[in-house]
Length: 492
Image (cartoon, rainbow, N blue to C red; front, side):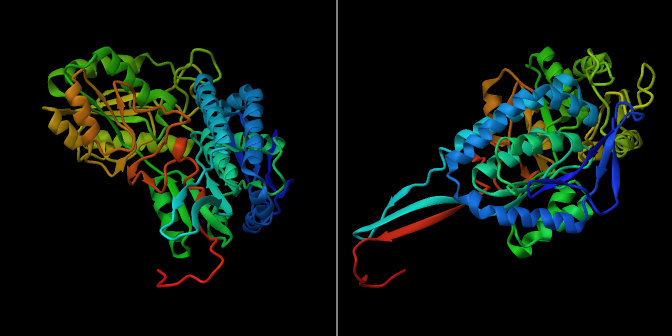
């Protein structure tokens, strides 16, 4: 059985806390994968200090040299792609195909960030004074905390760690305790690529103890967080008095708008993939289908038929379409929301239960679930469920669809299904989300394109793509006076 340890200052350490947690396969709870040694506050503090002392030399390393190390990490990830994919499937639950897709995304992101090391450009600005030269440079903050969730345990850490390191920061990486194996392998890869000791540190521990110690440490100058809105906003308020820079990607309640002129087969399949793929455990998952009433009966009939066709099971078994919820807590949360939907008067069309039989009894499996005649005030239409649950809301026209689509605290992703070009551009203009898709699912993104949302979904600069280094750098303005004499007149 594996034992997972924290990594700091170039060494794997045995925790003195005496606290442990088990890493359990959610598809088969009898499969205990390993034991996590949970870091204490003191050990979390040690990780931050290791990053602090490594920062000066890492900052002085030329950016292209830093980029070469990150590029090597991408190649090592490619070499260990199958190992990492298998680890994701076993400890997080998604299918191997989904895990491999996550690895491809992660590798692409790391490759892109390596290239950005040669594009950390500033600008030269004409001065209004004679014999003066003004320009800007990008500089790192210092120690950055990367706090990541369990649902994309390789891709999300990769798209935080890679740009942070390329920019010249040192990193304390605090992953979710549900996915320690992937965190350990990813840390091994970055350090094998050639990082000096202390540049990347891994802390395996609880958020309330180790995580709290990291975010409260005065040496931490920036925090990149992905997780729930409740936790992200609390973290933001906690560190605001210190002026710490925060980037937070949080919840979503992503809508698809289905118009009567749509390609129905495309709309149904895209909605089903967005709602039930990865067990609905994606911040970009489709959770609301807003459908024109004249076609709603057909849409519901076909989406229910598609939901029933998915095969549930262990993600490592060929032919599995949907894996389990990640753990008992998330499993119970999904079932609780299904009960809430029933109690609030939504019409349950399929699913709604724990899936059993055919090898599912020892896992956290929930049947793909569709509710019809959901109203905008119902909790299942407003709150993030993070499970394979789709709510169908019926509307009379496009204007009502847009009103309901935007009636949400969240604003991450959205999509519209229509062949009317006028409606496409009205949708793009009016939808209140950071990302939107036309005739494709709400899920998905590309390594070289920014990712993020608005409202209670996102705080701070966007992740990935052309904006990937924005959060991890500060802009310094430099004035060079080469007159060699005292400046006359007023200065401002």
